[in-house]
Length: 100
Image (cartoon, rainbow, N blue to C red; front, side, top):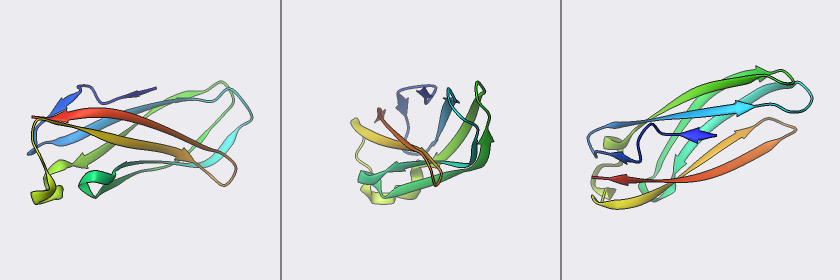
C-alpha cells in the first residue's frame, strides 16, 4: 500500500510518502522505489533494498514540493506515481494529493 500520511500538503512542505511493500513470491534483489509528480516536474528516488518471500517493509520518499517553483497551483489535486522495480519485476501505483 501507499500512504502519504495526509492527502493535503502545502507548497512550502516536503511531501513524505510512505510506501509499504509486501512480497508474496520469490526473494527479490535490488529493488528500487521512486516517486514522480509529472505535472510538477518532480522526481524522488527512495533507494535500493532486498525483499524476501513473506517480508513486508516500509520505505519513505521525501519530495520537496517547493522545488516545483512556479509550476505549483494551489487548491489542486495532483497525481503521484510510485514505482517499485528491479530487472525482473515492476509495480506501479498512482495516488492523488491536494496542495493547499
